Image (cartoon, rainbow, N blue to C red; front, side, top):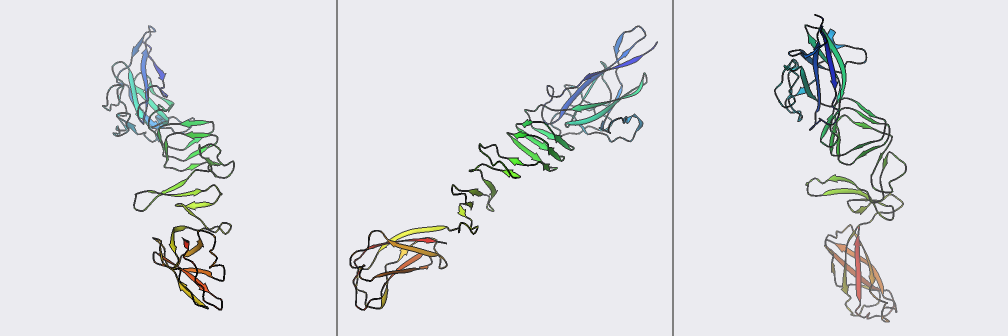
Length: 330
């Protein structure tokens, strides 16, 4: 009686993939001399990492693939018992009584070999994928040459090369590195050149040391770089930071000729002695100021700004009490 095996290819690319691992199912039948197909149970099945084109693993020298008891990829099966039933998490090494077998593996290319006393060993190359709507882990090097869209959470553990457009709407983790001619923000009106292409309002953020907020590198509407809301000094746009502003009313008392006089202090929280105060009147100078009173540079100390008035003329002047506003910058 002549017996042949039938390996029926049932490759489940997405429909039967759950969780991170992909599922591959198949079955083995034997063909009797009466041309009757009967299931071939207890046929040994081993799963290998893809050995390369034209290489069969039945001769040895191939590395065993890691298979799992379920799609979560938490529990690995043994290399001699890589299979599980479609509804079972028990790892076995052979087809069931109905000739069925299957296994869970990370997405990628593999070769499995079926052995039986009826036909020896037969090996088949397969590609196993996953359901794109669930969390996914990719192992090995991956090259994407077409337009690709990834949603949800995806982990790429090998080197990834993007030859065309890749759109990531969820979280992607590249543990093996990623290469592309450029990376572009999904925000409208992103930059049209450069390796990293951002839109005008996009941010580059770090977590602060206290883990309480983000620290941002951004660009303002005047096209100046800002770090943590402070303008960076690039030589073209001298960067200044405003510490605070305050107002006091001048003394309104006589200032002798050739004398300078301190005016009431202004409290500006955060000011230091190395800061600069820019002071001005809140209104037009009164007539008594226009006879020669000079508003000198204010003196900045810790949290305090002190305006000064000077009379460089040859006679005393009594400048009317007037509001003086000072802004501290650094």
